[in-house]
Image (cartoon, rainbow, N blue to C red):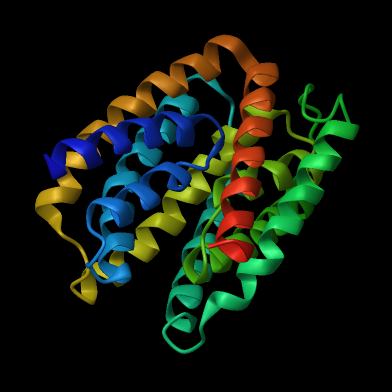
Length: 252
């Protein structure tokens, strides 16, 4: 029964995450609810062990239909990988709890900006090329990768927002690009958790199959309906993140 419940949560998480990020909003609370006495690091390891496969499959699916800007994104993914490792290491030294109260306000600002700028992310008009684009993408990868390793909630949504706002991508291209970077940050975190023995592979691998199934469905919908659909899902997911992180920070 435990495996069935977390596998259903993993399927839903893969679906949401493949469109615009935020799958952890579903899967992590489900793991904590089903395994309340398990060490948090183990639950985070299970989460990464399941979600990394869905994110990787989503990246492959997007790459077949969306023209990714590989020259900028591959170095950015590498930066995200090392940023995530650094963040994961730091969390073993410093408690990230101070970010809990700040995160809801950052998400409110992201949501407000997206709602005010109604045309933002509807058209794919990259603002930079060459080394400038690569440098900015690497900055995004390094900073958000570090955040993913250190704390995590909303990583995919932050990546999408920054690709749209800073680089001028539409929401579909931003989501596709974010999946590549998020795969790299997930691999880094998973590697660290696995090294520390914090992954229950008999759960993670079964959940990974469900996560991939959800990811395939979500990616298909995003590609079919385009940037407008992804923008709508982005608004819904960020709104849910605000409620969840606000509750955790001030009411829990």
